[in-house]
Length: 304
Image (tube, rainbow, N blue to C red; front, side, top):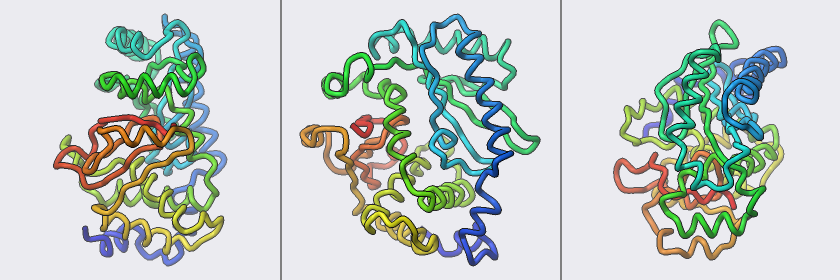
């Protein structure tokens, strides 16, 4: 991977990456308030104007985690449903849930509705003339609140077909994992995300490149390896991240904060596999999978 020239092109004449981050990537207070107001209107619409019983809407994605890049932010709105007791019941009605959300968002939501995915309705909403939010709206159920972590992980462990559907339901764990990072780390994550979106070619549907979220996890692990410093030089941090990316075949990461280590001893957890999903952190992250599997949601462990 040719990183040197890409970095020079990405950050231009800026010797001080703190200045680049402040001037080009961070949202100022008025900008953030404007974006939040647009998203809050969409949240209220979902809570009050669709014929689905909504318990709670949680903001995820980069805006929810505080790692949004100005003009390039994305957000997940996880719609926790009040009358669905299990992920299996959500999966059974997922097609109808998405169809209902799409109809009401298209007719009454004031947003541009894109093609639905198997797990979400995607929309674009504008908060500035130059800035559109890409929003994924994902139906989910509060499995942690209703059943507890042990029961949830046991079900995920047994039912491989359900694992991708747990991703959205565990979004709060993802948010808690990232939002506790110091300000310097969120700056580094923004730089990495900006670099990815500016320099890496489009996936074009082949799943070749890791997602921004996977890159976030690499940044976090390198920071942990360095002793979790509150302050550090962003250039050195970026260099450490790129070294890890160049040596991706040696990279394997698991976080154990919220789950039993025995889960990683399961036969599914072996080399050349990337464990990832939209809503969690604790994954065996090996960036040397078989071709075209890097972006495939295979097994969501989700920062247990």
